[in-house]
Amino acid sequence: WTCDKTRGNKRLMALMYLGSSLAALQADADELKKCVWKIRKVPGKDTFYILNRNDEPLYAPHEYWTCDKADGDKRLMALMYRGQSLAALQGNPDELRKCIWKVRFAPGDDFSFYILNRNDVPLYAPHEHWTCDKTRGNKRLMALMYLGSSLAAL
View 1 (cartoon, rainbow, N blue to C red):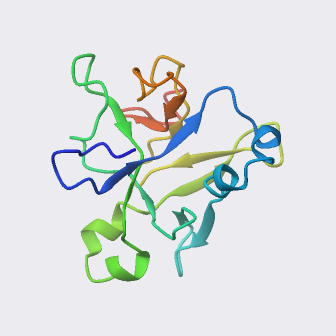
View 2: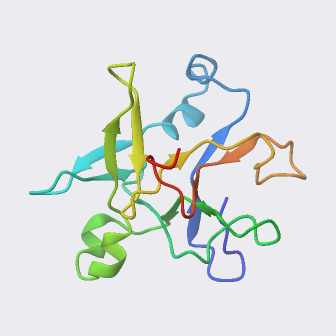
């Protein structure tokens, strides 16, 4: 599930499977492994790296990587760069900076959080319309950021 078929097939999309739950995935070990994320503190900062099961960091890409080119060009995809690790990105501070996230408590629940990219734009689960598998079941929902938004604006 890459979004750059003509550019190297390296940019993996962060997806949610519509209609599934953690309980439903308990019986499928291969699918369950895909749901595990690691959160690593950036040394000396109040920010974090979010890594998938392969230690590939989640990142907020350049604004080119929207999924709504014909509908406002505002919905930025959360991606992982396949085959890259944090260690591999240490020599490239511009790319490493894209991998930094802020985690902030959401009101009303001790274990609910907002996840904000380096520009304070919140990560969100969009309406069911925003699936990336229109011809394969309409079940894979993209994790997105709405360009120009902020927690204060919401």
